[in-house]
Image (cartoon, rainbow, N blue to C red; front, side, top):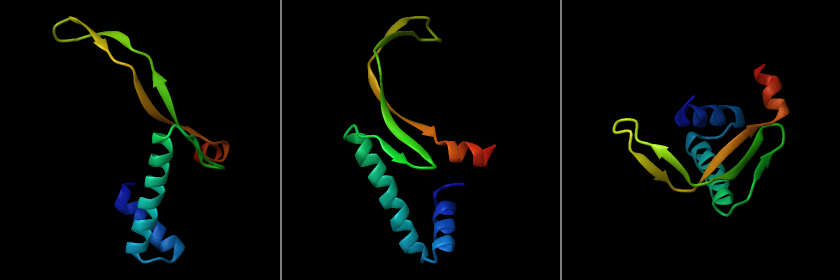
Length: 90
């Protein structure tokens, strides 16, 4: 399912126009993104938890030249599925 299919589903399930459903989906994505940028965790009960994890700087290797390179530290968003979502999929 891509973003436009999700918007279509939300529009049908909630009885909204596609434009309203599109704005709702955009608002949810913007809300999650904004919270993660501030370092907050977003927990949706029954669905899962979005959070940011820090990755330490490390040494890597360029596979083409075999040269050693330094990979800088970074922050990465992660999603952990909740129990209800796991049970629904299995």
